Length: 536
Image 1: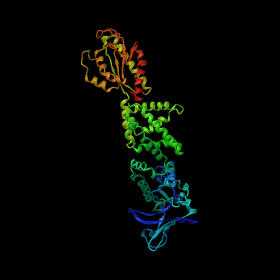
Image 2: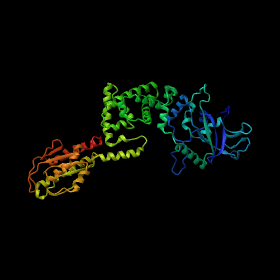
Image 3: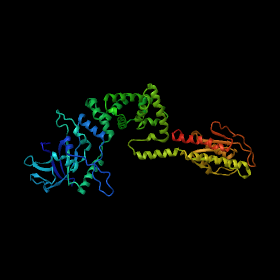
Image 4: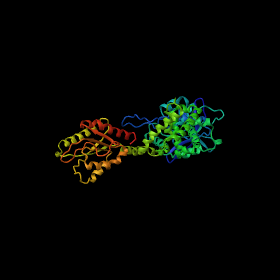
């Protein structure tokens, strides 16, 4: 790109009617000079209501810009896509007509000229000529030359080190789109649509395909370890982890299942983000990879096999890294392995209950969270089914005691709501006789409830049958039995103890009905907390 003491000049080929609409100048220039003559036009997200939105460019991601700079400086096979700029100025008709007249064909833009000239008899080029003294005004204040695509590539271009052995090292293609002067609403919209189209409609190469392509190259054709680490630390850590997992013992390898390169790369990206020191020194990263892969081998060997889906989950490698990282660094190695295994085992119980092992990196996160939420909600108890005796007025004091027992249960549930443990009481209120067949509705009520509370006081036959039907809930620890001594009544004999062994159940002997809230709340609370923790 020609330069003088007063001007910066960029040359390229002109074409009109590109895609039926645009006028462009396309050529080559160094990244440093493209950065010098252009600037991002940031989108103004604080525009007042009713005011037009100005600008289009997003904020810079410093890590992305830094990784591009490392790639350009240190990567061996350097390639950079075309930089897309827009130039906002007035133009004469000759530019579109492609007449053979020489000279300036942009109007009234101090310090910025589009000049048409012939390189040979029939070949014309167009020059973008900028006065150096006017650059700050043209670029930063007037926003005459704006970056549409390539902002991250140009952000740190001024820091690129000149390489005398390769003067064209930073030469890059550019495409300058010639639009009207700043403030032209139609051209502002076109500029925004160009930004949107470039950034949203491109079809990226499938990342698994791309990673397999890079990681699968023979060693003699790869960049050196130092070059790859400098250019892309996450990719280098992905390679280290893959190499170590490829030689992992068969039993552990089988437990992990097929591990796509994308899964390893996602884990490597997360590890590098969490620990900035890994990107600073290649030997530090290699030591980390050795330690993690060794720990992973031992963790897989000791981790119980109760939840095999956990080890095959997309996130397991990163999860194991976090579990290993939070262990006591001063403890002996085996003690640290035991700590990590205990953490992962606890998480295995949780994810196994709620289906969290099914999380996949390429599926909609919102959809997966919704499905998990439904699973968790289905697991958390919501209702308590009460099976009890319903004395009549003929039973005298036993009817009063039965009513007080129910009030004690209701008071226990009311107290728990203050702890945000919300359980509804399902009390069918049946008064069928001892030999009357239990209605289907009763079985349905038992099946739909989460906690079964059996009040054996009075030992009514229906209650005993309902207790037997509810035994299937005992495996989940959600069957609670209570008993209070009852006196003989015209409808019921005296009962001083339950008619069968209840010692292995959640059982409470009630002396006075006032004891009920204090005795039942710990059971309800424990069932709820175990469900939240995934233990029930």
